[in-house]
Amino acid sequence: MAVSLKGRSLVSLKDFSREEILEILRTADTLKLERFRGQPHPLLAGKTLAMIFQKPSLRTRVSFESGMTQLGGHAIYLAPTDISIGKREPTEDIAKVLSRYCDIIMARTFGHDIVVDLATHATVPVINGLSDEEHPCQVLADLQTIGEKKGRLEGLKLAYVGDGNNMTHSLMFGCAQVGMHMTAVTPPNYEPDAKICAEAAAMGKEHNCTIEAVTDLSGVANADVVYTDAWASMGQEDEAAERRERFAGYQVNAKLMAATNPGAIIMHCLPAHYGEEIDFETSRTPNCVIFDQAENRLHAQKALMVLLAG
Ligand code: CP
Ligand code: NVA
Image 1 (cartoon, rainbow, N blue to C red):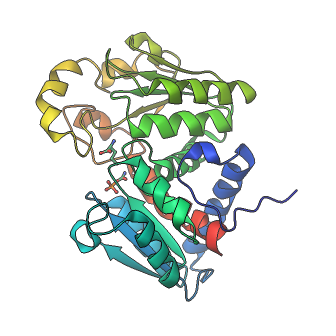
Image 2: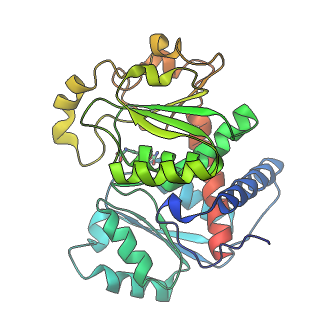
């Protein structure tokens, strides 16, 4: 049966099946090729995307906005102070009003409950552009990137090193759905959410892969993909100094990479804090694919928007 995502929202990657994720990745590859060939693809002509931001952004904002332009549509940037989501009026009302003007809503929020609330009350698709709990759009781009570099997804091992955060959670769901083993290696007390780990592990079992969280750095052994992210996420700036102490040793560098599979690729969603979660030298090695990931945000999100609202 053909996969249809029309009218759906993407709040968490766990809501999308393996077939649905693979369909997004196939569409992303097609759109990427069309862009490189200079072939116009105005699949969302006349449509409007509302982009709500409670936090800063480079990649998410620009890739969604450029993506919408390339698809023949238009994007409206709503800065944190423009609509003051969560403060000025109920989120339910914002969802209902934006649904009368726009065809898709994308939101980057602190509380995950705000994205859930928007998706509950909007009558158009809502896309999570990062919440404190998940970052599903990044993982779609990451899976596309891994597929390009490794030629497959199933059966590979991804080791995530650093803070058990929104990236870790979405990677766990994404890996589980596509059959990629994943070990999250974090310092004690900074593990990913236990409930999410259990859900992702159960999902992984269905697709013959192991999803686990450990605190010992030996968890990176035999990794085909090493992934890291900021030790202090947006909103945790006050904890940055303490986290630098707690996370010392959990840095992606040449020594850590020596324990992984030959040819292992290095990934980071960016922005990076060089000298903390990754050293600059390692970030500039040929197997580090951070800028390919950043580029694929554009293609993966265009595919997502076309499938949800095309
Ligand atoms: N990776 C990512 O989401 O980057 P921005 O915070 O710049 O959007
Ligand atoms: N975990 C990071 C990801 C940034 C793209 C944050 O939430 O700040």
